Structure formats: structure tokens, C-alpha cells
Amino acid sequence: MEETPLLHPAEDGATVGLFWVSADGVYVGAPATAPVPNVVLTAAGPRVTGPHPREWTWSDLVGLEITEVPARSAPQRWATHAASFVAAALDAWVPSSPTEMTLSVIASDGTYRTPVYSSAAVAYSPREVALSHRLISHFIQGAATPAVLTEWWEQTRPTKVLRSREREAALELWLARA
Image 1 (cartoon, rainbow, N blue to C red):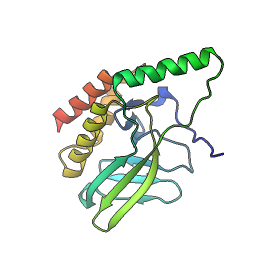
Image 2: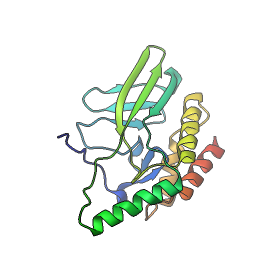
Image 3: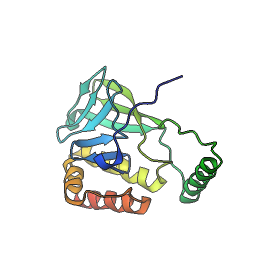
Image 4: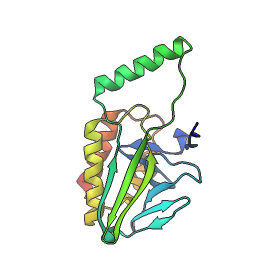
């Protein structure tokens, strides 16, 4: 059986779109404990930590793609939450591992793929995924920097898990600054 990666607790940061935002930085997906790889988005570019570390500048990139993203509509997410609640009430609930996504860094010298773990409790909204991809495009084009996300964290420090509408509003705010 595969070991579940250790993830940081919610008070350390917040999930907004495909990102985990904290004072420590901006991660794609949930930050995991070594040796599980992490992808950190810095002002200079993406950095992969773990057993096979790599680093790029934003200008080196042709693209940055995240696939196998768990995305569901609001009714589907609510149904999943309800099913988990019923299973827990019946003492039949077993926590599952976070969903594994794939991040592909597409650079002029080739493509590098690494797993990252979803930080969404159930799934992301399709709009949240689309806004996240747009923001990543702005990073690659040089129109925005991940610093806007860490600045948001420093200013707001959410004390609760953000609802999808709140996460989408934060993503829209960041895109408007680009």
C-alpha cells in the first residue's frame, strides 16, 4: 500500500485555486513533507524540491500544465461531502489520500513531469481551475508574479477554509492586478 504524503495543516496556509498560499511561498497543490516533491512558484520561476530538484526561470518556459485535476460542479462537490458525512456517521468512512495531479514544465530544452497533490478537500470548481490556468499563463508571460499571492496571504491570513466563490474572487483579484 502506498504511503500517504504528509501535508501541512490548514492554519499554515490557504488553498486558492490550484495553489497553496502561505508566508513560506506559493505551492502548486498541497505542500508535502520530503521526500515527496513540491513545486514552489517563486518570483524567478518554478522550483521542484525533493529527490530530483529542478529550477527554471519564467522566461525559460513555453508552458506549465497541470493535469488530472479533480474538478466538479458545486452539486457534485456537495453530494461528495454529503456521502462522506453519511459514511462517517455510519463509521464506514476511511480518509483517502489526496488526489495526485501531474505538473508538466515545458521548457525549450524539453518537458519535465512531477506529481503534485491536490489541496482541495473534495475537488476544485471548474471555474477555479480555469482561473488558475490563466494566472499561470500570466506568470509565464511576465504579466504577473507569484508574489501577489504571498502578499495577499500576508494581508488577509484567512482563519477558515475558503468557499469556492471566495477562492474564485481571490483568483480574479490576482488576475486583475496582472
